[in-house]
Length: 368
Length: 245
Ligand SMILES: Nc1ncnc2c1ncn2[C@@H]1O[C@H](COP(=O)(O)OP(=O)(O)OP(=O)(O)O)[C@@H](O)[C@H]1O
Ligand SMILES: [Mg+2]
Image (cartoon, rainbow over all chains, first blue to last red; front, side):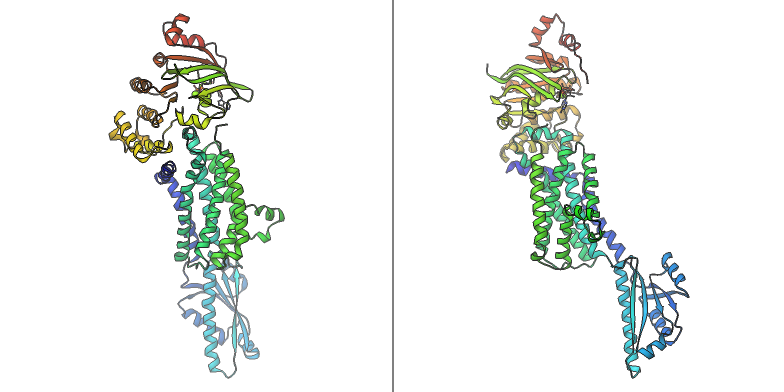
């Protein structure tokens, strides 16, 4: 026990004395979250609106002045054709546009119903949704006033159209992806590099000559990264809640349990990499190319797996983060419980035990 | 005299290449056994087999009475090892390194504290205890590494070029430490490139191209080969070498 303790203590010292490692460990998740956070939650106030008014009647004039008076919107330009409107979007001048169809007033009188189109730049999905909600409120308010004025109920509907990112993918989708990515990267890269470092320096020989059980070497090498990763996970969760206004709907314990399983799987991969890599650089390169790309591409958080060609779809099945991504999404975003993720947990458990067994077996007790 | 290292036709092949070829020798308890040879002669390979780091290809070997094929765990309990590469952690302090190695050899907390104290005093490094090893001069590092390899009181200590690159004065001090350990009954198995150090050994073996081509006390070797010093002995043997690194 003393043996194991002195070893684990030493590993923590390595981590905390290496500024580069520390930066990597704690900078990575922070930067990722801040990046998404800033990209997704800027200026909802004074959104720049472009108006395309084909109607040119009382109703459209009233609505335009209402929009302009709202603190959420500033009408910055009026255009006359769809082409002009499009170029406003391209240039990034307009965040949203309102299109009033020709004959709005007449349509409303005849059918008691008319539609105004709202076009939003949804490359920034969070604000696009928020903006379109604000806009709907204005229309609702206007409808309410009208009902009291006229004897017959009339209704203007807003038809929102999202440009660039119609599915409105945003923070809710990215956070689970970031969690998977950060845990995977930190665990495989850090653990493989720290083991290969001992080989490179020559201290591994001394460890292997000592009666210290090789299994203990593995445990103490992996332990710090396991603890740090759980800590990292908690930081990401806290930041998602505080900075990105994301709600953790499901059980946090379940989330941490599943993450631990995923962390172990990633550590096993790191251990496996360390068995083949001869230098720290190559360990880092293998971890980066071997882990980063599949995690980004085949996990489903950037590109939906359903739309992939069959070979990639099949390949994605062996990527552990794919299953982990589903688990976090289900627990964190949908608030589902154990019964909804047991299958994915089982797959992860299988991968984890398999990888651990192989990597421990490959861990060289003798040199060559 | 009790034999603590025994080998017979110990051989290591890497593919077709024979790094160590049919080594046969014995080392007695408390002896300082010098293992000489040019670069690539096979010294490190031989030492690694004796420490249980490399599986021999053929031949026999016993270390501290245990077989290198089947009883490596018992061998590990009885040996200390200082590798040719640097054996300490540069980002840990002097005291932390001592405590770490004492720790993994399973010493108790009380023993670790006592050993750390004793070692720092012996090396006159009390004021350096809290310094990172990376800040020490090489000679000090090597003396520290040697003392650390003895922290668990092994019967045999294997030193692979412990004084490589160290200045002559510090090398002399290093050898004082070796003598001190040997005086306490520790067997010292040491490789070196320095011929003045060969003179300090009780017996030396000179390896050429994976084969032991001479093995005796420095005095006898000089007499046999009619050489004024070990430098000359080594030169006469080593120039027959065909392989070089
Ligand atoms: N793992 C290995 N695979 C293949 N060849 C090896 C391996 N280890 C050592 N060798 C070769 O065996 C020979 C002996 O190497 P060894 O390290 O034992 O020499 P040495 O006497 O310790 O040399 P030096 O004085 O440079 O330390 C060298 O030619 C080396 O290239
Ligand atoms: Mg060598």
